[in-house]
Length: 264
Image (cartoon, rainbow, N blue to C red; front, side, top):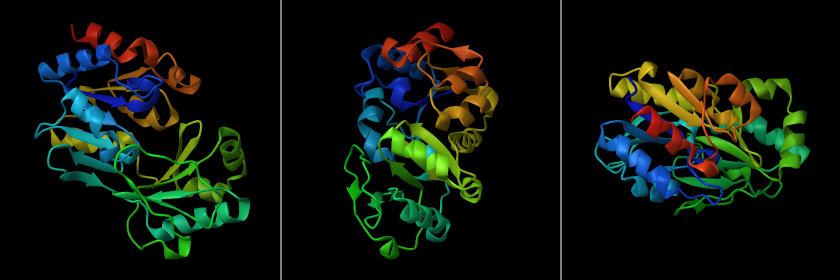
């Protein structure tokens, strides 16, 4: 029995202009009213997506969000944490040295703000919400736990970064292309599926109770883990190939199409 529906945002729940359509909103509110948990799963911090949480009414004491691609599982109402993991500055150093030598940008995110690394190439990374950006030289980056590291630039530059990344760095991180212009580096144990597993355990459920929607590389883990993993019609070809369930595009209210039919 499906008890929790997990939703990627960009190119899945959101339209191309970064909005939740009224059709999707109403469909998700309808299943929520029946007792099905609705959980947003994103690479962003919760403050950057709070307007979506409020739009869907996910502000109760038992509502949660998977943030930073699974690095942080957080309660929407009181911001208490169920699970948290990440990278140390020492973990990030080899990636910084590679980017310094090859002219690539990096932004380092802790669980509250963004540190654009100012002694590297210019980044194009942006976030909605009241998120502080504090540029620093890498030598001045505080010693603390970080949720993830982002390389943001035009797709051709990130293609070159991926192609030139040495094998030892590929083994150090969980690397995911969340959007054509965003490449993310996380700890090897961080994935949306890991965050969802922690949340399911919290409710004393398991993946047989999970439905998940996604379109991109950073959604692969949760789509494989879920009893029902649903790829959008606009999903990357490898995501479409690995899933047994499919729906319309993000511009066609694909989420609403599927949940309305499944839960009717």
